[in-house]
Image (cartoon, rainbow, N blue to C red):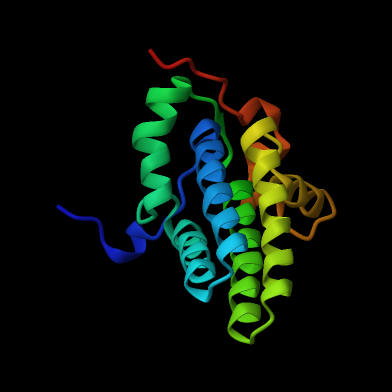
Length: 169
């Protein structure tokens, strides 16, 4: 039986950090091509990928599926579970950046689109190479300030609720 639409549009929690890092690597590749080619279609593909991941995590995202099914299990070969809400927040920031680049490109402001996309490349590179998720850092900051309620991600505030790292066979 296939999932209903509302259940299909859920973000996973927890998330395999290595799958998220793999997706960031794929985003880097597409974003660099978008900067070099500077065409609205590439910015649109970048934005669409973020939109799909914001809506349902990796479920409908080609990059997400490749990361979860191939790259994380066959290349990283390990799992590190982290809370999902900060990752969704980070994907939303990526959507804002890539959507802004798309709009700028459509308005004929290619250099501005390239600069915005370069910011996305920097953030994705930090995630991919070092496991430093800037969106997750911002999420934690906003949660500590009470802007994001604690109940959105109780595991983010309570270390005892976080799942330990699990090594894949």
